Figure 1 (cartoon, one colour):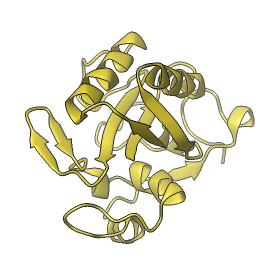
Figure 2: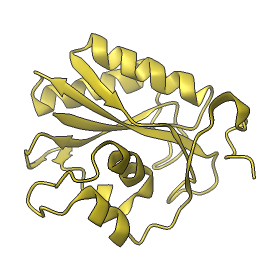
Figure 3: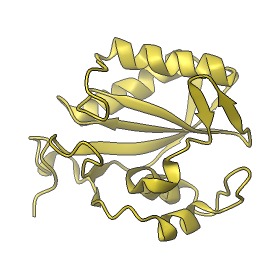
Figure 4: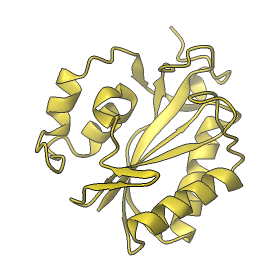
Length: 171
């Protein structure tokens, strides 16, 4: 089983995530479960619109390196431009986990090295698999979420009735 984090803060964010899941499926990533969508406050580069984020649980016969190439191709095909590190993007797809594998290779680190520092990853992952334990550390996703120093806002997305300007949920 693999877990991917998907996020978007440009254009029709919800549609962009749906298109990414469809493109991944066409490329050999079989979706098994998709978390709810969450409106999330930007982390790091703050001068940008809020994101929609989710986590996809899937299966694939692709190797980790092949999966990375597919993820990068889908991002590119959906208009991802890497101009500002951590900046706005049509779609962002990160490989969080690839089974129980631990991989440290050029351009590929699995488990994702910053997933324990990101509420926008941990909240949807916890929704799908609260008892999931990470390779090596054996810490559960629930434990990581409870311990993270990240206090950015992560709120369940209500769909079309929510703000559609990319700024964040209505208050």
